[in-house]
Length: 218
Image 1 (cartoon, rainbow, N blue to C red):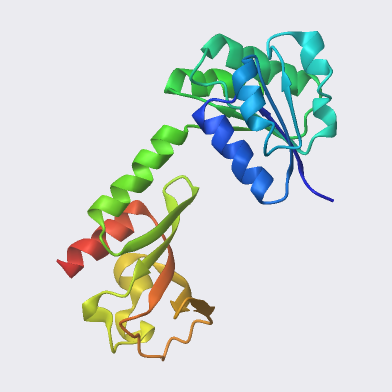
Image 2: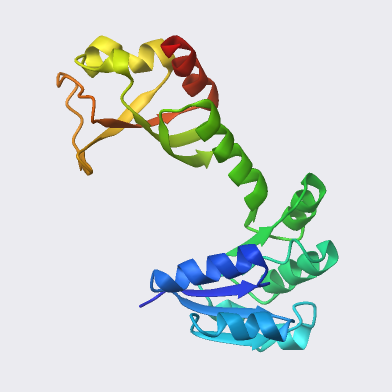
């Protein structure tokens, strides 16, 4: 059965999220108080409605408790509306409430009123883009939690021909290799296999460990 996701707020973040979830097979109910945005979303989501997320009766009609998750993506519009929306979702029994925050104060308040997760897309994009700018070998960077990332990096020139035993990445840099991508395919990690110029390493590390590795290269 497809995941049922409620998206509240169809600004750039909410609209992009709704579009991508729908393309991946989720049943998306997208709502906003602005009719033109609701109309735009109607072309790719399961259902779209004009709803005031601060109105308890209108929110109850969405049946949040029946959804697998709800995303309050109001952030850009109104901190107060985002707080009320988040509180109503929790009050109505939504099993997973994810709220968007634009600043540290909003993050704290949204957590206090019950958001299971609080996200800041601009902050996250800035952090990931900074890594792409600083570390030219980074292909993909995905956060796993506080100061822990799953990152795909191209094999550096000085690594070519050496194996993971020679490099001793855990000991020297605090980096764990979770996989190797070869010709577009993930292969099992063989510590004795010499690395090739076309390989990429999928690593788990902190920002500091990645920075240390990058400085060693230079």
